[in-house]
Length: 355
Image 1: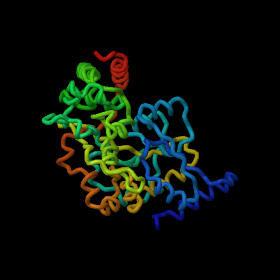
Image 2: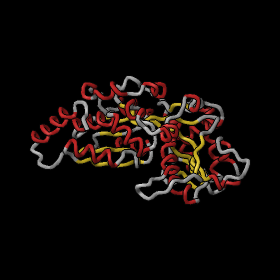
Image 3: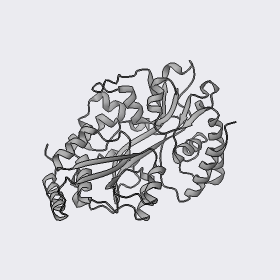
Image 4: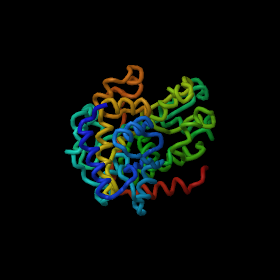
């Protein structure tokens, strides 16, 4: 497949490898969420650019950030959620982007997603994919008449021991805030205290805080309701025919009507990237229409690339590309200046025994 400026990028990468005297293939190191890049896309990139892609994964923004702050290095591309990009830039963890090396981004960005972005200028980041946080649930475990599309379902004693919440500070405290009608980005101490009390009430019913297990435990029946991401839920619902994973019509996904989080995960280039030219090549590659389509068919969430979205099968497009009226109650996770108030609230949630 032809890529815009692919030949030039590949030549730069090859020249870089020759200059350093490296005989083995250059490596691109990516730090991202699990199951978040199509293996076929990685294979295509490796073949086209004569390199090897090494992927490490994290299960929360906090885990990723803590590792980098503790001196974790060696990554070329990192995929934080939008609300952390500003902080990472101020702390010198990521590099300001040279958009002359990213022609596909400006040419192919799907502008209807601009309202869901924190930085439409893309100074340090290029949007990768958007997720909406709600409930992945087992339809046959929900009693008749019980409404799943509300945070109040977490208080229902019928689900005691059958609920998981994300192990994520902003998502969980944000859920408590939204359930009370507050902003997901509040830094009002009184509002956050109230949100903590709500989460502690929910804690009486939950099995654990975990960002991954709901993807397998809701289908198995170990968990009946798992706070989770739209992309993961859609993967479960549609299955994977090639991998022999059946579709699951008995699994549903609901967005709480009181409010739910919208979060773009971004592609950023590490300030200490061992191979920045390869990092730029990968970001540009993702914004090729054919590549974006292939990637969306795997991760099951929108990649804001015009050609990719336009060529999706209508059935898949209707599942993962939400209409404006569907996201009207969504709130975009934004950076907060006073992170300490969240950290203390989270420590209290984790330390308090379920009553």
